[in-house]
Image (cartoon, rainbow, N blue to C red; front, side, top):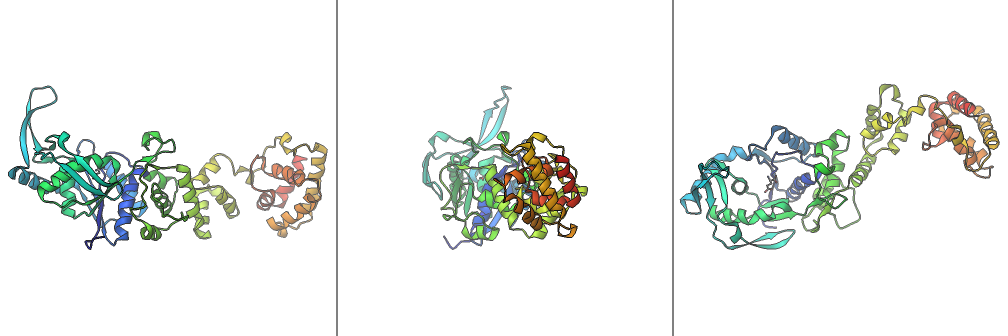
Length: 436
Ligand code: GLU
């Protein structure tokens, strides 16, 4: 690493709602800068006036803020128009660019002026931290266009001028920009700018091995915020898209990511983004929260009449993001805690056990539970009480299955002890009686 201070940038065009694969570029640039005590510049590349939209810009800013990718400088490329013009004029004066009068491509026969770069037609070699040394022939590019006119620079010129003026040392960006690099280096040489170190990140694919895109299900980063993901989990999960620390450790805090991140361990093959894995990261980070935070978040998602703190552990076990609580409520998965379920009688039967035997076991359960005082009617004691009966049967399921099913009416539900303790003694006895 040179002694120069590291300066990286994230330079999105506000022409859409970026998904997590796009944000990974920002994350890597941020982590790399922080790791080297450098700075991280955030530049909105709004030179394409027609496709750039305020709402996209706002969405990108919201995404960065939510992920905590704090930047040391923010500006819009359009604010630098004066500098772009300065360098265009300088290049023209020095013979590295020229104004060309050409027929407009719209078929109108009108003439218009363009600024073309005077291509020296040489091989350009640059160092890429991920791809190694890359050499590109520039002959095929011809005298490419760098501006529509002196006041309307195009992408390549604007990027080069801005990166130069900001002292960007490392350009970390998507692989789709490799083919742009030779043009940009030619412009750098023409204006006397240094060439930064490049790191072109391999593509991000979905689990189907096709390029990740919004059209094929990838979510905008801000959607994760809406769904109740934890930003630190999304940061962690996104960093693992095509990067790994070289150890088994997967759950990292922001500080740990900064300390561990390096470009050497960015994988060279395309990275796969998997929504399920992201949910796994989220759940692992949720488990790190204090019980107070978990309680607060789960209860907040419940309708007021369902806010029973006793439900929190049961719900927490079954969710991987806060909005899952709302889905559980919507699907009626918690209803049986609040009202007696309608029972499908046939489902009370356990395997080949006869209905007489099931009835008999339910009666035993009622008798045993009746003997527990209201005050002692908690999960532990209920469990000990029911297990002492179940353990004497051929199979525990002969008792535990009908009791659980009588209480919940669902094929899948928490164990009967916890349900009984939550709905209370009277309601438990009444549901068991009803099942008989
Ligand atoms: N504005 C470009 C884009 O959104 C990125 C430019 C760059 O990183 O050099 O794809």
